[in-house]
Length: 287
Image 1 (cartoon, rainbow, N blue to C red):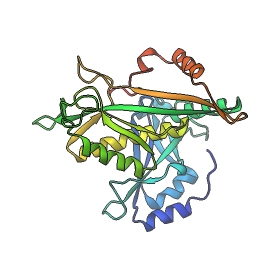
Image 2 (cartoon, rainbow, N blue to C red):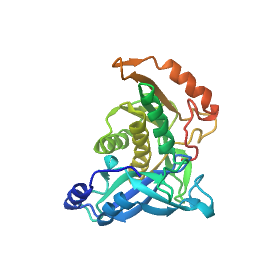
Image 3 (cartoon, one colour):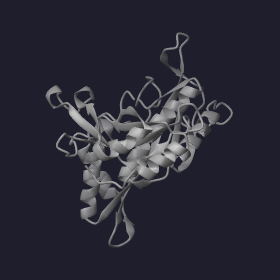
Image 4 (cartoon, one colour):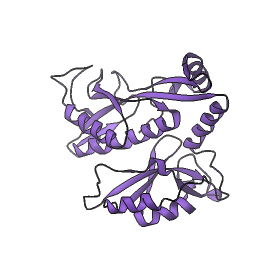
């Protein structure tokens, strides 16, 4: 378990802002956000000793006989949740966690650890891996029975203005992402009816991945506040454009203090990943 600074100051500051709960977040191997909620006064213990959970109940993690695992909060990702502020009745924050085995070793199946391992490998070779994704998603209306159905929120197209019914929704999404410390570059309607895209600033690969996870769970929450459903499924409607997550990549040379061409890295990744997940399709089908 990675040593971290004493979280007391962060915990006390959060409590003073009215934060009462903390979501300990991680993802399964499909990129689906998972979370367990603890009271703010338990966060210090969680940082020092971890919070245990049943890994056998998480998609792709462990078998029943190996179910004990624990979450270790990465306090650099600690943020108040904008739609559950401390000034409200249920002030809540979130922190992204790493997954460990009972022996105190990083869990090999934790997607965040898999990425960190490769980032550290690149660093030993003298490079910082930078990535910048463009996430596309659909906004659907619910059916009369309240069930989620493939009913596009509008009939607008690429960069349309007058027929775009989701401008205010996207603006609320941008405000929320900025509140999480994510610098948004652009937001617009995409090609298909009900389809949208929000782009945020590139960063090192691990931070970008954390931002992408934050992006997904935040957008779903804001959509729900507007009576809509946000989905990152690659192809929710037959016969029209699907959604993708295009990823810009570059290698920054630590020794030369300059960015290398992204082409060699892109070719390497394309060789190593199945075609169904790279590029142009969401790595989280069904999300």
